[in-house]
Image (cartoon, rainbow, N blue to C red; front, side, top):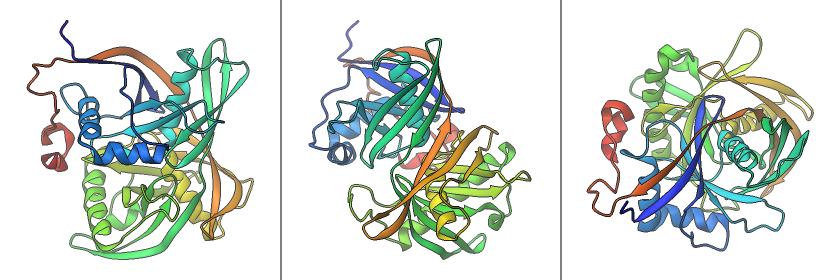
Length: 345
C-alpha cells in the first residue's frame, strides 16, 4: 500500500462513550509540557491536520474521541495524553482517562499487576491517578483521582430567545463547564430527548462564551466553556447528566470532568463533605461512582479533589492510513449525522 502515514488505534469505550487510543505511529508533538503540546495541537496547522485526520470522516465518526498517547514529561507519570475531538484538542476527560488506562494495561504497554495496578496519567490539566482493579488479565474497573476542581461562578444568568432567563453554574473539572438544571429548558434527560438536549446545549454554550471570559488561573491554555452539561436528580438520589458536545452529540457516559465540576458546586453550596460518595447516571443509564476525597485550593480558590470510578472495555484494533493522493485527507463532516454545527467545520 502507498500510505504516507499510518497510526495504530485500540478501540475502547467507557460506559458507552468511545475513546479510541492511538498506540503507535503518532508524530512527535512539540512542547516542553503537555499544556504546551495541547496549545500546539490547537494552534498549529500540522496539529489541526492530525486532529482532523483522526476525528473527521471518512476515517472518524461523530461518536467518541481519539486519545493521543504521548511520552510523559513528569517523572512520576507512566503516560501522557491529549483528547482529540472534532472541535479541538481537550485537556482532560474522565471517560477518556478510563479508556487510556484500560488500553495501556490490556495492550501490555504498562505491566498489569493483580489485583490492583496504579497508573499515573499526565494531562494538560495535571496528573490523574488511575487505580485499576485487575483480574485474569482484564482491567475490570478504574478509579480516577482527578485534578483539583473549582467553581468559577455560581448562579450565572443569561437571557435566551427560547427559554427566557436561564441560570447556570460555571465550574472547572479539568475543563470548564456550564452546568444547567435541565428542567429550566422543559426537558428531561432521556434518550428520546438527546437531539433536543444537544441543540439546547450548543445554543447555551455559544451564548455563555459570548458573554463570559473564562480562563484557568494557572493554566492559560485551558480557557472557555468547553461543554454544557445538563443535570437532574433521579428518584434514588443519583445525579443524572447529559453533557452536550460540539458539533452535535451527547456524551454516552456520565462524564467524569463534568461530574468533577459539578462536585465543586455541591461542595460550594455545602451539600457534600469529604468522604461522601454518590452515583451519577448517564443519558443511557450507565453509571459512575463519584466521591469527594479531599479539599484544597487553586490560586486561592476553594477546590475539591474528586474521584470518578467506571469501567472500560476494549472492542477492536485497527490501523488508519493516509493515501497521499486522497482528496479527502483533511476530513469532513455533514449536518445529517454530525448535527447542525457541523456546517462550520
